[in-house]
Length: 225
Image (cartoon, rainbow, N blue to C red; front, side, top):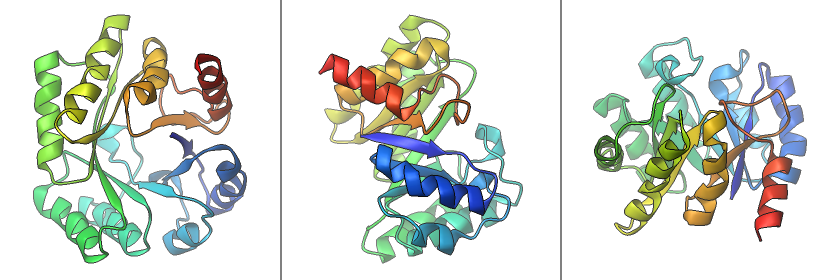
């Protein structure tokens, strides 16, 4: 499944991109931390397919400028609005994380909670990655997401090895590497069983380094199949 990251600075632009985005991708990630005049109910109401709501912390490459409690309240609101997925960082305070998880449980678990970890500098050792995986799983969400920065091709192998490791333990996972060296992992991840992979709707609108466009990703998938 290809998730297109929608990068927009205003509601008008976001709504325009949503109209065409669902024609190309299986799922749209709405980066609400980047939308200056955010109207979350209007954004969710406009969807014509499944969405992932991400309100990224500044410490992990995001742009949300409010307090942590304000950030989490928006994720809870997304759950109440019945977004299909919500991304919550593993570093989120346990008490605040519990609000998101309780909100999802209260809605009959319609929303799947992704517990994520991002390292924009390096790829940790295999042992460290497994400890991070354990922390993400222990947070109590539905899907573990671990994304690191690849400095060499071997880094991709370490991150991708988490996919069979996780699946053998009955845990849904998203895992791949960022950066130019990590591009191959974005292609290999879904082939190994990653729940989804991320792509940009258009060139120049990438939400992370090394991200390909949806059409580039589809072309590679067609060649491989």
